[in-house]
Image (cartoon, rainbow, N blue to C red; front, side, top):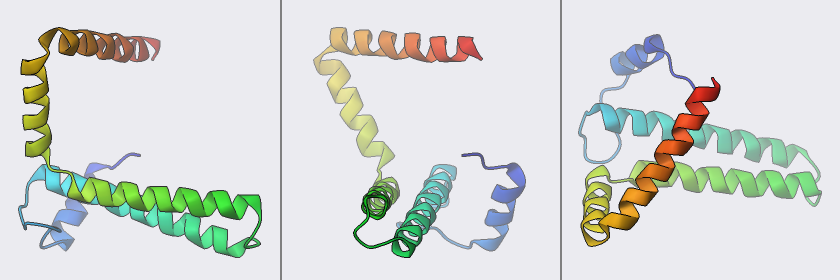
Length: 117
């Protein structure tokens, strides 16, 4: 999913506020863009599933995927970065060894993915 600068600039000019607390931070803006795209994808899948036979396997999978995307959109909208930060900091102070192993594993995975490109 790519968002070009023109699209973000256009959204800045067209939108006067954000959902939630009204903070106009870049993170809130990105959260809303992602949530809106997930919501529109869910609507698209729901519409395509309605076109198919109501009891077909594809219609069932389309409806389930649409529900998952809708739940994901709501999760992204309600995600609180400061709460996640404090939870992660608390976990790291309680178990620094495990946190170091997890960070190393994630670094190796990201490194191997970037090396392939």
